[in-house]
Amino acid sequence: PLTADKTLYASYKTTVTARKHVYGAAVPQTATGNITMTYNAVISPATVSLGIPNNITHKNETWIPRGWSTQTAVNAVITVENDGTAEIYSDTDYYAMYQRDVEITSHHYGNQTKTQTSKAYLSYAKEEKEAEFIMAEIDGVDLDGKTWNARGYSIEKTPGAEVTVSAGE
Image 1 (cartoon, one colour):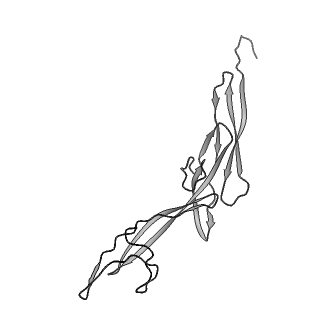
Image 2 (cartoon, one colour):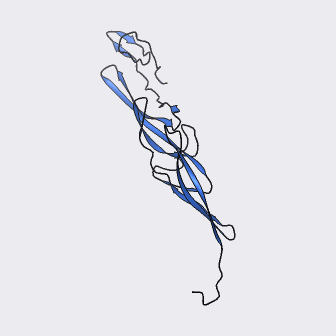
Image 3 (tube, one colour):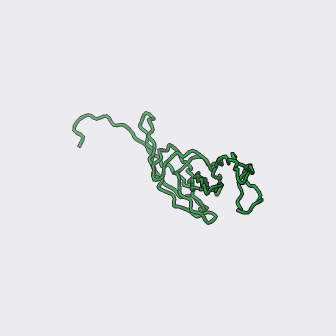
């Protein structure tokens, strides 16, 4: 009950929507929240939970979500981590981005094996960015009085197979 003088301040709100674009979905999922404004136009953002996109299968490989971005490029900066919240002042689009580990194993003379791992990226729109590797230099080999110069790497084991990657690329 009002039994004494009071000063009241008007408060306002409006609803905003985060549109969540995920791999393979024709229509984005949505999450809504309210932004609020005081009588003197001080605005507070809506806090919206974006959740975690599901793992997906693309070209028979499993890709895991790496987070949400407001950019659409496959290698876009993640602006909201998986299961994170976004603070928005207006309707905003978020795009799920995915990644997978790619491993390359190279076999060298003398039963030496070298393994490298790098990440490949995939966007919600199925745009891919290949994993990037710098292949190890290959040392020449002295065997049976002959010097064998390194040619590069091949995806086949047979002698004389086509070199598909030069050493150091």
